[in-house]
Amino acid sequence: MSGHSKWATTKHKKAITDSRRAKSFAKLIKNIEVAAKIGGADLSGNPTLVDAIQKAKKTSVPNDNIDRAVKRGSGQLGEAVDYQTIIYEGYGPNGVALLIECLTDNKNRAAADVRTIMTRNGGTMADPGSVAYNFSRKGVIAVRKTDEISEDDVLSAVLDAGAEEVTDRGGGFDVITDAGQLVAARTALQDAGIDYESADVEFVPGILVEVDADTARKVFRLVDALEDNDDVQSVYGNFDVPAAVLAELDDE
Image (cartoon, rainbow, N blue to C red; front, side, top):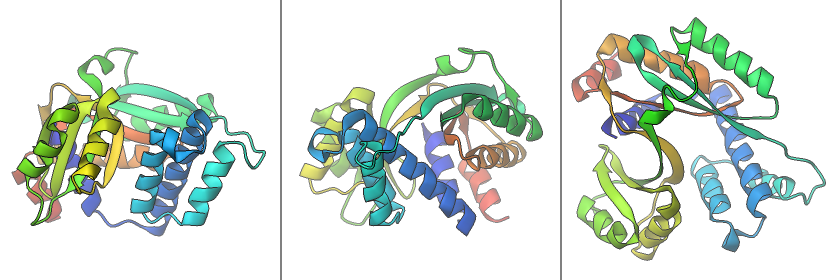
């Protein structure tokens, strides 16, 4: 789990260009549309939509864009939203295992694009099941660390709400839950007056592989290329980047 968290921290430190911000907005909007299509526009009965909107607002997506996405997804604008979730499995540099989650309206295009990106950046596609067995679907709630909030505070808030563990990721804490307990844990944090940055169901690796600086550079390059694709929503890996390696990469 530490590798997953450190990876997220490293990514957050990178500069975000205008084009990358636009792509990020588009993917967040797509999540809102899908959540609204599946569960409807009523926030009180659609916790997935609540989390999708929360994440979009944290990333400064304009409220007008969010409102239109909810209406479009729920059919209020008369437009059809038809996205398909597809998971591709592969290996990055030095055998790092990757799960690539796509949300697309064109399965053939997504498959071709992912395969091309992997090939051009030192990765290879894997047979179904050869990578996924090492990942579990978990709820992951990110909480920003402040002087007023300690790890014990977070743990006390979610302990009786199905949380499996709380991990320190440097700038904050990750609350890990069973996927079905995500909403309960998120609600428990809110009831305790603890704000959260994001709450998502993610693929969390069971076994991590420690990587050196050279491998980390190559893996980050591959992941960046994948996430730059419009159809790719998320990329999950089983690599752990030691603190010394992170420091070396940050200095470059």
